[in-house]
Image (cartoon, rainbow, N blue to C red):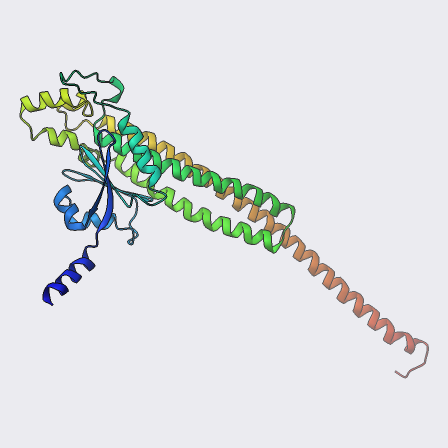
Length: 322
């Protein structure tokens, strides 16, 4: 009985989640792990896992740990190591394209290791594995938010034009709903934008994301030498040993910051157009209200004049007494 209670308690605390693991060649495998499995296998803290909990509403986050990068961006909950990337809930319809993009990018760099270990290294693909995985995830997130923004633009601009042409409760309600959706999307885009901007201006946090560089410090000089030869996913840039050099990662993050900033600016422009339309509509409504008030006043005055005319006319003719 005690064992049953213990089992129930453990299950309620650490439910098993489905993850997909992808290696440097893009090969994947499904894993069922609870939080204790993840902590033990990936050497991260329990508090880091709370960042990835879909139930908890944590802001966009990219954290560098000793042996892993913990990433929470939109629908992507991932843990990146120097050799593998783990994605939570791979069956989710929004995560499936993420897996496909990772496989495409990672498998594009083939080690081509034969029996004689004769390797051709592409000069353009010297980035370490963790950067290529991070770049793929940033690409998916930025493209996803850009697509949602484009959809919102395509729905909002015609709705605003229709509203300015004909002010009706139906058109007003449609614009009101689009404005709410725009507010929510803008907040999501800004969270990703702010996280990238914060990283770019913090060299120490960027240095924490260099997992391959930290791993190389654990090897002997001979091991490091052969490691770079046999692993094209860790480029020669890591062999320089400059721990303060974050230029490669800074350029990567800067590119996607500009991408997400462009999306943010499009939403800001769209919001400005909505605000301008609302001002125009309010002016039209105020004018209509003033015209209505004038008509009511004119009608009231006219009615009063007619009433007085009806009363005074018999008196003038001496038909009634004073």
